[in-house]
Image (cartoon, rainbow, N blue to C red; front, side, top):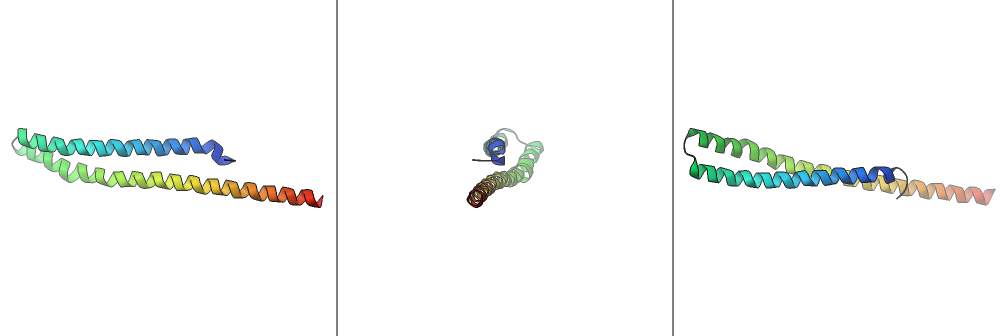
Length: 107
């Protein structure tokens, strides 16, 4: 690993790790909320219970369901960007080495 990515790579993987943790957290929270709605509906009767269940089912769960794949896509994009930077660094190094060899041969 050469050049620019040597310094950036740890940060990129830290960002990817943080996103992965957030995905796990959201998945876990979503599961807990689904369970909570079922438990609350069984124990809590009335309009407030129905409003809470509706709010969770119609707003929280769909929003969480939308955020999870968006975070996964962002993590994948960061990973692809790191791979592109690594490839560019390798190619630049190869070109510089080739130029150095050519100059050494000429001079």
